[in-house]
Image 1 (spheres, rainbow, N blue to C red):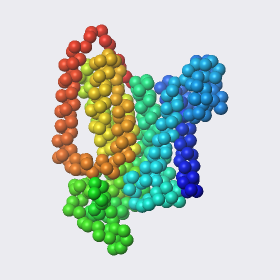
Image 2: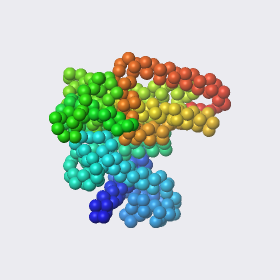
Image 3: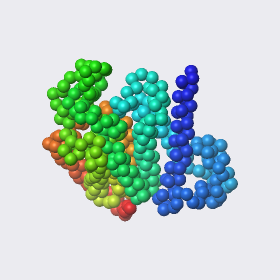
Image 4: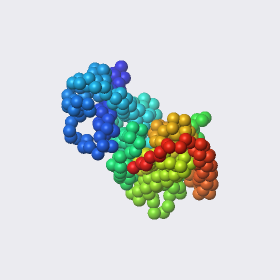
Length: 402
């Protein structure tokens, strides 16, 4: 009971921390598109201009205590304030639960086996835990701010993109693959695997003469050309396999190459989608916000997860954008609300998603044909949109985006 109470207390504290950060994210969502300072003036009512007192600025609770209205003038507040605080608090709890306690990325340095929270909390002062947690918490916060700015304003502030890409590349430099595990483990794991339970991906593991890994078998192919799960780090996979001689595991050069490849691949994919969609509807209908989202995610996760998430969001995202353009006659469309969840799914589920796309992402010939196929489908989609847009009523003007 004491252990359960301590775990519950710890998760509540994480939730409160996240909701407090969410309150700050609300300030960013409102002020950054307007070019205003995040520090001064203090939070105030947009209607009457009076400063919000500290007791009226308590995350989550204050919205309901005030019934969503300003205490001074009674002007209503957007319910987005409450939802962002709640979402950020839940996100912090989810990241710790999955990545640290449950260790879904299967970092060898945290092989808890059983009683996940007991072992995780016993090692709660391990700085590697909090580096993993804080890195992905920052990524989640950036995605929330960028997505909401794009949804409400139609564009992502340049400062959000620049800060997100910079932090992603800085993390890549300081914590290169396969961090938090040792580089030597990834080298050993390149050619060995241990069969798992039914339905579980084959995981590369080091081979020892004794201990839990007795019976590991040499694989027929190395991880970059077979059906094995590459060793996963904070950046799920390195930029390429096999690693070039100048990019050894754990080196800053490998980290920089992985981060840069993620930024460029994310920008290229989203840029191509934007170009072809806008050509199809003959207007600047789709802005560059999705490019910013994928650049930020690519800087933090590498190019493979960014591309996988971008492709995963294409079908529902472009379908929704097309319906908004043709039926609702809206000139400004986006699919950020599909792209952000796709990034979360891929980021947290890469251990299971990775093996499904591994043969594609580490094979030049297959990847080339895949790129050609995707580009052909997008061109065909743009051609269909072009035909449909010909029937659009005259007089509907297009808009330009920053």
